[in-house]
Image (cartoon, rainbow, N blue to C red; front, top):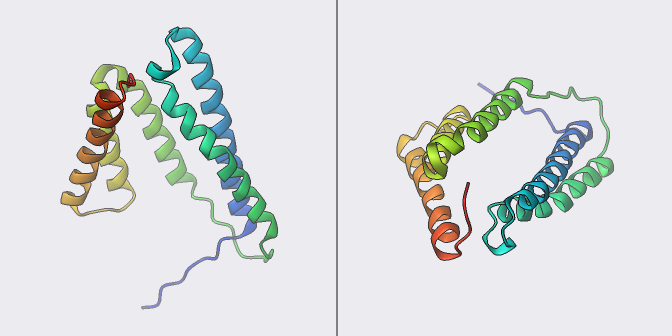
Length: 151
């Protein structure tokens, strides 16, 4: 059986670029506002890491929008995966809501396990290693070594 692949059109890439641009601006504003409310120095602020990620995401989203404009425009069908986007967005929202109650390590482990499983990974050993290893590494690196307060 042959696999068919839809080519990515400029419209689809442009939509992704605008979504990431909006996400970046939102994260920057959120981090700055919440840091002001926390009244801690930046070195110990839990909003430093989201701010850094958002600042690095900003130029990448602009490059994505720019590259979409340079692509050849053809009339291929644009397939926007609304279901996948909705599931990931709702999962992220639930992750943010339960994090204060379950702590960073537990909520991030559960979020990554569910997300990797939903995205199609079925090797449970790999899912377990990534889901436990990544948050543990982030906790040790930022929480213990750099003394950054994690949510």
